[in-house]
Length: 114
Length: 107
Image (tube, rainbow over all chains, first blue to last red; front, side, top):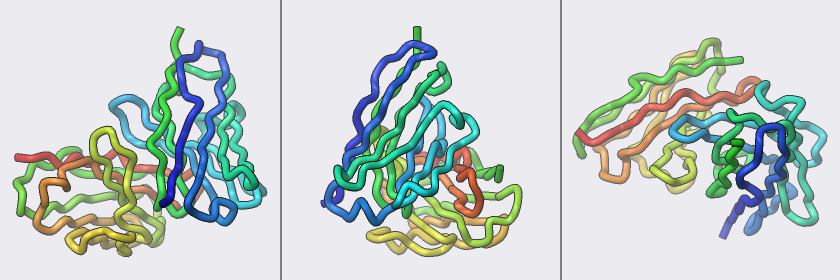
């Protein structure tokens, strides 16, 4: 069974940092590009970032460029999102998803508030 | 950035009726458009990819059409579990973008 399990969310003050993880199992993680998508409370979906299989290609939404860094560990079957200089508007549920969008995690909530 | 505009924002229908959802792109995305369904408190689920291809295990009542800038998701004979929010997404250009969503609600 394919599983994507996000972790690392929580409450952080504006300007703070957080590192999200996405643990993958049940499929060949090392053969799949991966994405992060977020959803602010009561709002729609916003694509955040993409990383290719070898990490050679990384793409970011303009809203997070320069503040967020996507990475992966193909040995540990894990995807990461390092989030720095967090703002109130980064408050959202963060989902990881495979590059073909067929598999999604259940999300982890990040709340940025003082 | 390619902007996707979905209409209507809300569709009020009864079970058994047909739903027709629209997604319009600000510039051509070819056939690089997908549709997702999101039920409350759940992760999105891929329904349609490349404009008209049903994803694995998606019932045949879901169909997608269109190319270029105008796309349609049709749900024939709505089932109770189909009342949800639907998003289109383009993967033609970076950054990837989603539409604002259409909520299909029970009339």
